[in-house]
Length: 99
Image 1 (cartoon, rainbow, N blue to C red):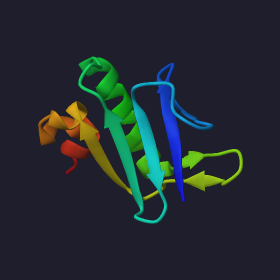
Image 2 (spheres, rainbow, N blue to C red):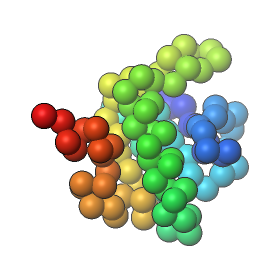
Image 3 (cartoon, rainbow, N blue to C red):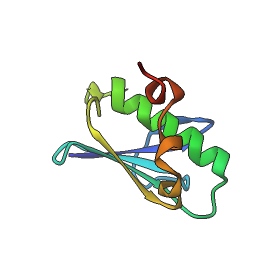
Image 4 (cartoon, helix red, strand yellow):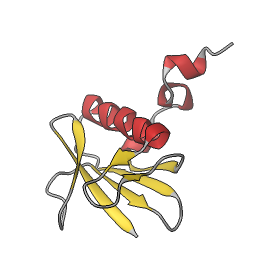
């Protein structure tokens, strides 16, 4: 089952039908993946904020109205221009500087 979340007002929201925003996150239960789509026209700040939110969903999941909590411990895949960041910038400083 695939559920699409759209990114608006600095948060992901459940989408009923086709997403109306450029940035969206597809939760694929079959492959256990979160697929974040960031088109090339979006700003770097918005891409980074969406990616941080998607990493949060990767860790704790997303609470839906019907399906309960989804996406926890799934692999995050970034598609589009948003995937062009260096590896050291893709993780939070807490993960980078763990001792």
